[in-house]
Amino acid sequence: MTGRAMDPLSPAAAAAAAEAEAGEEADPAAAASLRTRVTELRDADPRRMQVPPGNPLLLSYTLQELLARDTVQVELIPEKKGLFLKHVEYEVSSQRFKSSVYRRYNDFVVFHGLLLQKFPYRMVPALPPKRVLGANREFIEARRRALRRFINLVARHPPLSEDGLLGLFLSFGGSDVQNKLKESAHGVGDEFVNYKLATRAKDFLPADIQAQFAASRELIRNIYNSFYKLRDRAERVASRAIDNAADLLIFGKELSALGSDTTPLPSWATLNSSTWGSLKQALKGLSVEFALLADKAARQGKQEEDDVVEKLNLFLDLLQSYKVSRDCPLLGDGAFENDFGIFRALTLDLCERHEKGVLHKHQRALHKYGLMKGQMMSAVQSREPEAVEQLESRILEETAIQTMELRNYFSLYCLHQETQLVHVYLPLTSHILGAFVNSQIQGHKEMSQVWNDLKPKLNCLFAGPPNALTPPRSPQEDSAFPH
Image 1 (cartoon, rainbow, N blue to C red):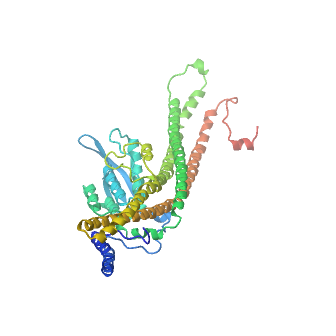
Image 2: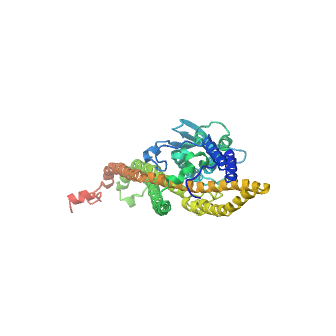
Image 3: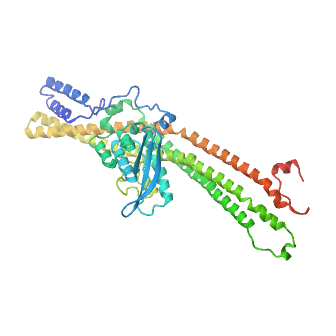
């Protein structure tokens, strides 16, 4: 195919195109009139959206603008018992739509599947896995966080956030949201059908688009691997803070238990000294400071989970959706029961899917079109009824081949924009580092204050005869007053 890409035709326009091609050699003037009719029918199609101003291939959003589109909260509500199993519900609240609705996991599954159907060339984030039996609190909390990341990425994705499906999912308060979503998407078609600019995508693509994608794919793969390792380390740092909190709390309780021990000591062992009694009295009071230290450490760990680990997971979810293939049969009930590792192993990134899917089908279609062209011309010349009927069928098939070519370029167009979107999110790195540094500074500062308040209380532990032990000095004291 040569020349500028053509719009996919409606049934009326396709019939007019067939009539025009059949009569082009017999009556050129009539054929020209019919082709004008084709153009009018195509342009009058009310389903096609208007072309945005400027260069539509380039995204003009900043990270702050995307984050400001919406903030969606997903919170657990008390479990309800079904006839056989308990099920979990979530309260989903949107700032943009000023709404608060109840949703179950299967509602997310239906919404996710419809997004994949309507936006086959976009980054639709994956859902967390589904576990029917044995879902413990840790799994339910991890899935809640993953659902919150999913819906926020969708709510901030330029094309996805402008679709009516999102508003329906976030604001419909009826009991049958799944059927409502399906009815809304029924017969609408995907983004290629509804976006007027889709058939002109080739006009906006750079000449070296394939080379650009090869470089971008390698870069994004490296970014993903690095952020995956950063997320693992951040999880370990936050986990250590929470473990440290538990250890400090137990440490303080054991000191208090030691000080509260009422077991009598024989006088021959203590030599009538009251040292142990004084020590026990002092130990009993230290549990308050250690409980405060534990609280500070736990809050630091929780803050790093929310502000550092979650943001890293958000970016990883975005990068992973760049790699997810829409061709894998992973939708439906139980579709995400497998481990994420298995899920990732089954997926292709968007660039590979373009090359192995749309582009491969396009090349086969072009070959078939070349073989068909000669048969069509001989059918026009013979004017036999059967040949003309075959001609009409093949013209419709040619329209499908043209549409496949247009989809090929539109797929590249979307890939170009999705790659830009990944780069728009890259400044999130500074947000993550800032949150991590601030958490460490604040956490150590608060704990240092408690340790300093605790130190004077240790003096009574060393009260006794002149030859008794003295409290250890700090490094600053050692430098100021050397032995």
